[in-house]
Amino acid sequence: MVDIDGFFYTQNNEVKPKMLLGAHVSIAGGVDKAPARGAQIGCTAIQIFTKNQRQWDAPPLSQKEILGFQQALADSPIECVVAHASYLINLCSPDKNQLHKSRESFILELERAESLKIRSYIFHPGAHKGLGQKMGIELIAESLNFILERCAGFNTEIVLETTAGQGTSIGFEFCQLREIINLVDQNH
Image (cartoon, rainbow, N blue to C red):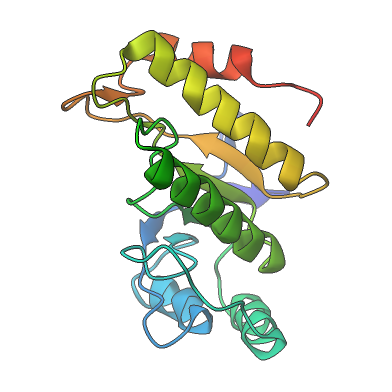
């Protein structure tokens, strides 16, 4: 196989997209450590948290941290970086305080991903905790519309991730993800 322009060409001239190999790597000690950690285990793609995933808040990233991450990325074989949302975030929480914290933390993390020029920000939709699936889906879409309005113009894309389906989780069926997408204002 020959690698040309990001595609593999076999002896029979079949074209196959180049595959990336990735892992979720730690940002302990700073986000700039992540690319080297991925490279050390043979990755060409990495997923990171942009902050401690067990806390709601985080101080803003400094210009030094942002530039350090960009330089570390440029010095590594990593071709793709995605960020994963904190597991505290629940965009359909029936608890108003937790919903507010979830939305604000989501925005904070999305801002951090944007400042690091991370391609995608991945999150699990949430758990309705008794509201019911329909209300939960509507609240997730409402939350996303709120977030997208606050983060207008961002290049980092938001990616819905499936769940295993435990408890009252939403997103374990593709039709649930489709319903969320259909309710999100596509003008963002």
